Length: 370
Ligand SMILES: Cc1cc2nc3c(=O)[nH]c(=O)nc-3n(C[C@H](O)[C@H](O)[C@H](O)COP(=O)(O)OP(=O)(O)OC[C@H]3O[C@@H](n4cnc5c(N)ncnc54)[C@H](O)[C@@H]3O)c2cc1C
Image (cartoon, rainbow, N blue to C red; front, side):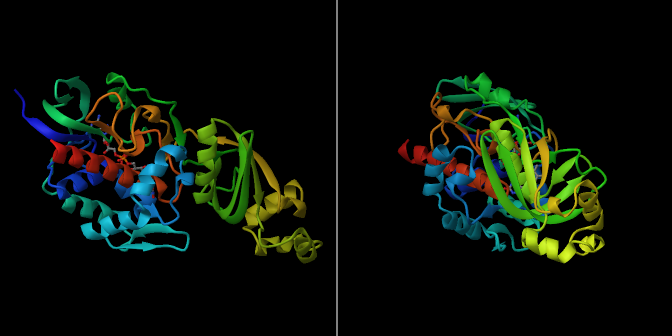
């Protein structure tokens, strides 16, 4: 007969490692089963290697499922989460827009601190979990290399972003539903800017769809087949959540009025290269002149690749705010595997942390009640 573990965590990513850290701090030693050759791989590539791990402007409005996320954020306010990081040993800094990064500006610091906090946890890498069955008093977890019984199982397999979608079958196998999966936080696809690859612009961009209008200032970066950059990533979430395309209206000179542009450049259009990248200025002049500067309209769709997160996942109707299954006591689902996606800016990792804390604290409370 196999040993019975108090808690098996399936997936050693951001959420799984934070859950393991909290359990370890609370006196429970979890077993982490990780499919990859090492844990925390995605943490290392997050935020362009700098790991934008949270955002001081976090609120339920930054997520697709505000009513599900709200009680979790209320239980774990931003300051408390940052304090837990501090207790673990991570020093952070905030940029002017509320985005939180490790002080080192190096994603490895976040992973290294999580590894230090989980040094007493048992971790098996290259051990993908293949199936989970509910059995009397817990679960039987089968992974490549063995089988283990567990009183509690935490599903923390992440999303299809950067990996396969096979792990969602673990939910299906336990009778749980998975909602529609769509790539999100990706670039906006259009052929309108062919030839401008690599050109950046500070703009006000407005996305109009049949479901709403979203607008903000920020930097965009042209790709051969679309518009990228933090602002485009942010807007892509709304296309993904509504499964639609839209019209992108770009104001390339948000600090100037039409009159100011006219006064400055009418009759000496060649000087527009002093305001905008020359390739962009030439394109606007070629296609319609100065009037396009403040309202360049283009149809966009969601790029189906290079996404950072996935909209969709474990159907939230079947899970409580302690992240526990309503179908199986002792089964939890945390991080991106749940149907929670946040806007670009640190909100997805923040969700990984708070959902992990909620789950770990529920497991620890169960332990105390035993
Ligand atoms: C390029 C990129 C940049 C990003 N930058 C940011 C950022 O700066 N800020 C931000 O907030 N978010 C960012 N994100 C999103 C963020 O990284 C994710 O939302 C977050 O990592 C989700 O955490 P998770 O633990 O749920 O999933 P993951 O971190 O993906 O971890 C899941 C783990 O489970 C393992 N696994 C999967 N299936 C199995 C199985 N069957 N058995 C065992 N193990 C399994 C995987 O190998 C993986 O290690 C970025 C994403 C990408 C791809």
